[in-house]
Length: 226
Image (cartoon, rainbow, N blue to C red; front, side, top):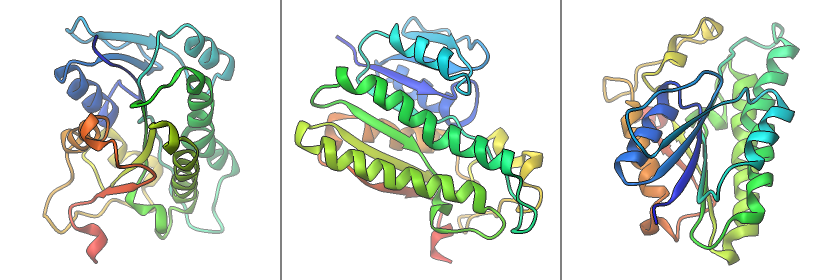
């Protein structure tokens, strides 16, 4: 039987690329996104759900068939310097990047078995970036959360990891909300492609990565070197 992955944020960017990559690898994929997503593949199921609607999210999780991998790729960006931070933006960032992941993992955990996976999409800025403290703090919390889950689940053979991309060529890259802290071109001279993140995700979700857990795997085009 093919394995089944729940992937959030499948309408565009990294989430869409991961869904496509897993479908090519023979996975069944259920995609969560606010808008219905059409893919010409029999293994794909689109579920229209607003992750910010807790009741609706829990209902969607309750009727899912067995899930072998949770991939939380949905994300948002807000950038502002200290002194101009917006509390509503902080709350939305925290909920989407941390609390929504908690809700999904908590609901799916009782049905997960040896060899299953939890994979969160973080950011290479999790150790700090000027003008992005609201965003960065949620991605740093994501790493601590993932490492805690990894420690709990390692004896059962369930892995938990974070893939932390640098500036990736997605619609989020040029969102107006990051105008005060624009993306920087990595030393390799181009932005990371979503397909490159998806390829790493495919490996982390594969049996070859059974011994990799509790890690923040950075893919940044050399940006972390400077």
